Length: 393
Image 1 (tube, one colour):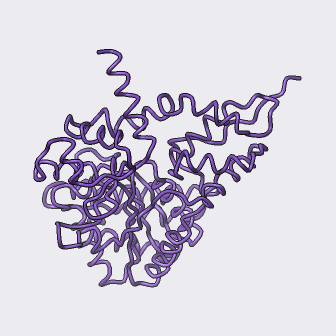
Image 2 (cartoon, one colour; image 1 turned 30 degrees about the horizontal axis):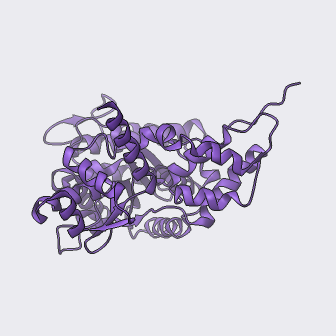
Image 3 (cartoon, rainbow, N blue to C red; image 1 turned 45 degrees about the vertical axis):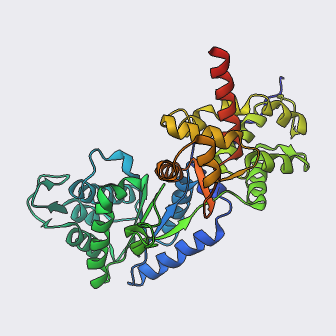
């Protein structure tokens, strides 16, 4: 019988199963504390911010699992599911997802059929549009907060809180953060009646306000937890847990190489391990240095190209110039003045481009007037793209 390798346990781009989740201990403890506080009638909310591929969606799914363990009605969805997001559409969607979640809980026999029937009759009527899942005229409420109050009065004998986990929430910051301010107003009204509703938006969020204020609508209501790269210990725990599931060992010396290559960035780490694991022969049960050396050959050009393209290929001409200078600079970090000199840009001309690159996650501001690429392999990708363009010219 021909030996078969276990399925690859590393799946870049997909959320980690909550049972496989590692690290983020302080952030998860923060969530649990705020959930407990909300369940006791003193509403507490938080946001999850971080760059692309840092694990925000996986974190939300873990929070959802923890909320369900605490007997909360936990509702996860992505704001990308809503076209032309407005206050009315957002309100309708929140109520709709409560109904869908209650339907799911009824099927699982966690909620009675009577509760389901009452929840299904809840709808919102606004000045602009009436939004509902059904056609009945009863139980129509004038706004989101009164609809949530009605939903909670139906659920309170069964659940401890209602928790909304909103992925891809950057859209809430458009139009001067109007939607964030709207959610803030809703939560303030719910606090008056001690209605335990928690909202957790996650995304590439702006956690500071205008220059010099240090505040934003996000920070005022949703205290941000900033997700960063894994520590060495977290990266090693993640790798070990996944490989144990597949019955595969790894040379201890390889851990250092993996972390140096990936910097603990969750997406890059998962992609790197996925590539190395795919090089195992069916009869092999141990990842060695040889597998990782084989991975290094085309990892940036092939495996990471779709991920890095958004940071370089899909940006503007001046932004690409800035990134190119940073990729070819002899040091990891570069100062504002050094960039301006290299590019022959005026300071006031350069500043908005740098701000946009920081906001988009391509670069990191590490100190006053000092910047670096968010990942050293982005620099390798940029140089490979330049070589390709030069060879084609």
